[in-house]
Amino acid sequence: MRLDIISIFPEYFAPLDVSLIGKARERGTLDVRVHQLRDWAYDVHRTVDDTPYGGGPGMVMKPEVWGEAIDAVIGASAIPSGARSGGYAQGPGEDEGRGEGEARATPQPSATGSVGPQPVVPGADAQTTVEPGTVEPGTVEPATVASRTPALPRMIVPTPSGRPFSQELAQELAQEPWLLFACGRYEGIDSRVMEEYSGRLRVDEVSIGDYVLAGGEVAVLVMVEAVGRLLPGVLGNAQSVVDDSFAPGSMENLVEGPVYTKPPVWRGHEVPAVLLSGHHGNVARWRRDEALRRTVRNRPELAAALDPAKLDKHDRKLLDELSFRVRRKDVAN
Ligand code: SAH
Image: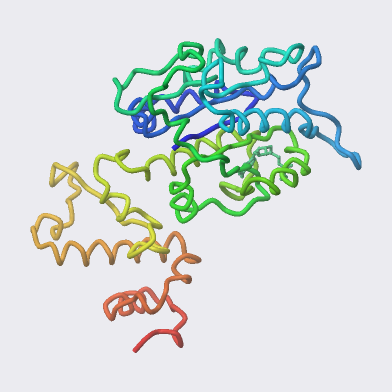
């Protein structure tokens, strides 16, 4: 999967070097490219914001700079790779008088090391990347992630006013070969940017929760981590995704119950005996009971959305004990 992220703070994405996501990048499962939005602002201060029409406090991100940035990021892959001179993704750097574009982004601290073109060669040594400029025009390139990506990405714009991010949406995004994240700051991005690209790309405005952050960077980190861990081979045990809270299937609208490891007694607290019993059926039943209990306690609105057709007799008895009413009239048999 290819991910492009445009932001005025590329250094925010340093954590994408770490842990599961960092490993996925090393392996080439994830090809992350972080772009400095200001590379497409051409005034001396590299301004990306302006005062809002209609008045009021705060600033709004300018459409022109976003348009230039997005065009460059999505346009780069449309250029046949053999015809490209500076690597796979091109900023406006090739264009005289327009600033340095991604070329300028390359030496950015970006502890992620991902600023600028960074094609990963699957199957090659994990650390191997093709440095910009090392592929001569006209030469045959190794099969790259870039050359396998489709013509256009799906664009995600984090905003508190967007549709809620969820495990379901994470699963949907994990199917996409290419995502482009546009990180807003200030009061957000001029709305015409989303309007403009909706005509060319699938654009989703997405919120990670009912609170307001200072910028889209943290929201994008959240989404990238949630999506990235669903990609094949990223988690050591693919089964764990199925058992997760909210996972479509048996965990739909449920949160996971408590988990334990050794020792069996710690500071007088015992691990529930059933987990030591070795009886798989009982363990599974206990886990489901605990998931139901926790969901009712912490997330009653989720419990209310449980599909009655997917509740067995035991589930319903437990919910009754918890005095929790699932839409009774819908309950099958
Ligand atoms: N005035 C806006 C909030 C702007 S916050 C409003 O009331 O809706 C600045 C930026 O932070 C946003 O453009 C967005 O990119 C990001 N952001 C803030 N809260 C967010 C959330 N809950 N989910 C996703 N992105 C968020």
